[in-house]
Length: 447
Image (tube, rainbow, N blue to C red; front, side):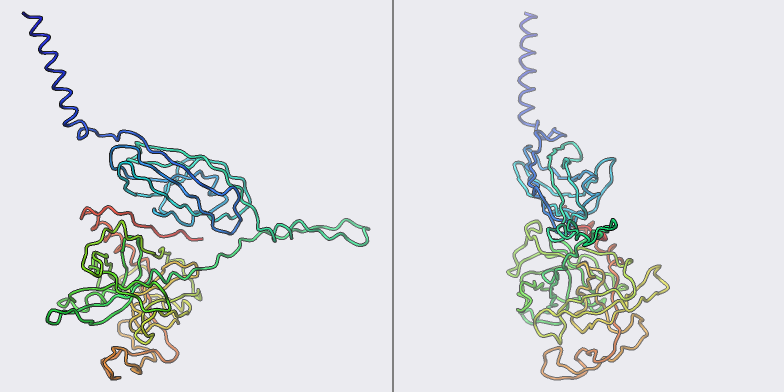
């Protein structure tokens, strides 16, 4: 009888254990089951001074959602090449003993497969052999792919270095001085597709009508937009009913209205704001992870020097309906008592009403400042050579309701991007608290 009871107890325990596994096993798992697999495609030969893409394929062979934490490159690669971009991902990195890890933060579901494009810029000749490592699930999963790339000089330059003209009279041994290899300049691509037109709408009866418009810059592929605060909310007790985002698809055509956005962070003292795209033009909510919008990398405004070239992009009222580009230089810096760094960057580039909130980029195509106001950056200062000469609001009259236009020698003010960085980070934290853990790009390093 006792043996029968013991046998029944063993059988009961086994059945309960099996049932608990099937009912709760997956929930009790604290570690992902399975692994990740990677495969890298790289060209066998790359040319110094030319962008070289590495295509990394990652497949999530676990049964859970995992985060791709880092992509690590051997430091031997970074001694001869610079990492220009990682998409999707960031250039924010951590140095290890023999590797440099670039933060990714991309979420992948069970069975998902994703390609990551790592763009290298070779700076000198070398034969690179190494392993590329992917770290996921808070370091619990890792995968390694080996690759080899030979960095070669351009054909024309290599040929010129190998050519030696002999002396007609060999009475002495000539000293042959080879030319010093120089980095080939990379043409700057104007990031006009990252510039948007922002139109504030007011509700009249049952219709939304245009109230005013300005410009902005997309700083994240998920639809994070940097602009001016006065464009978003012109007063503390006044707020438009909607903000329409028009995307620059073709610089020769007016930008189509494609999205609605909402402000995430507003700083009226700095006159800066950060918006997030939330709906398409048909009022249908959008999934930010599927937007994949073109964006501009952030630069470092503290590196700007007097006389550095600047390019301004935006939608000024006097520029018609298409995007407008103006050029100028860094004309100086304005310091205020509240800030330990320049509050404004002075520039000779033309800024008109509507360009506010747009893009001021450096010679490397990075966002370094936000066009903010006419004048030289002092609240008490008068505008310089700014007159009402055009119908900027489209009401058919040229009067005091129109925006003044710079007509002669003038200095305009830009907000340095380094003052906007805390606002962008604050917007990211707010979105994360709203259960929107989307990856955002970090600023590109200086060349």
